[in-house]
Image 1: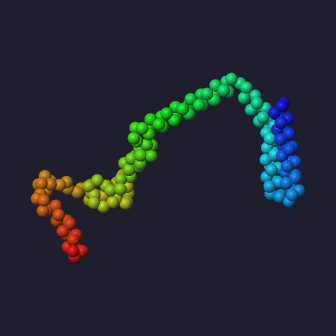
Image 2 (image 1 turned 90 degrees about the vertical axis):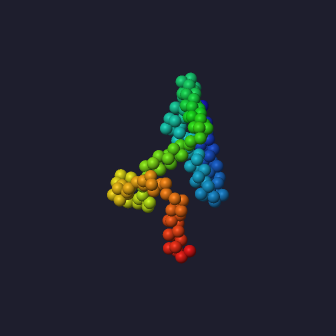
Image 3 (image 1 turned 135 degrees about the horizontal axis):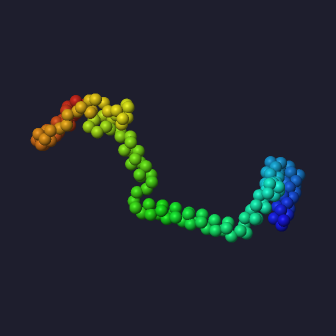
Length: 155
């Protein structure tokens, strides 16, 4: 009963201030003040004030707030432990995205822009693997690709 009376008085005072503001030819501000001052009386008429005042004095409600606080504390603790482990949620998400969407197909020299990771081009799939003899080639052969590129550009 006391809460309803206080809300009604606050609304009446707000409407009075809005009337004075409108008298001073500040109609936009007066309208805004009137809108704010009607909120408490609206809450009283809908029953929200009675519901809130009834909830505020129940021990079960405060136990519920305690449980919510404990849940929040557990969430924050797990986030702190996650940060200390070195990997963040964003890093794990980026790693999963990189696994799903490979930019370059294994064994191919060009990016695979077409069908994605489901279908590989036949040339890339059937490319012969380097043999031991080619791997153990002389160091001079390693630069043959670079020499070819330089000659192509006239360097």
